[in-house]
Length: 140
Image 1 (tube, rainbow, N blue to C red):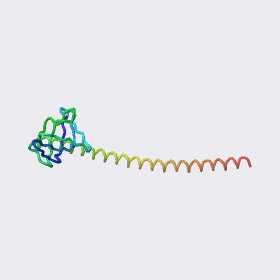
Image 2 (image 1 turned 60 degrees about the vertical axis):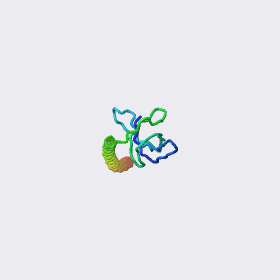
Image 3 (image 1 turned 180 degrees about the vertical axis):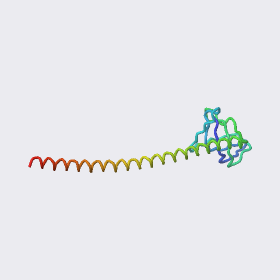
Image 4 (image 1 turned 30 degrees about the vertical axis):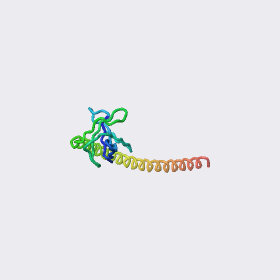
């Protein structure tokens, strides 16, 4: 699976090197480029070279959570990912605004309906009163 990760720490030990990568997003289907965010997950990568703390990298992770490939030259793919996120954010904003407009419209319609309902109840009461007066006059 392909992940977008941020390099958090580099550790060097005698003869080995480990890098802590904080996962930001993943792509399950590379052909469709559908990315999903990752919450609070890190991977330790060993034998990773030439990446510095703070860098964003694309990494290929095996099913057993081992880093098998690091793409440190990710400017192009990251720009594409961010463009996709930006597009989705704009869509989300548009849909949120439409939702808010719809809620406002429904609220106004509900208020208007309540006014009509109140008016109908008032007219029904007047009609009942008029019918009661008429019935009293008839029996007098």
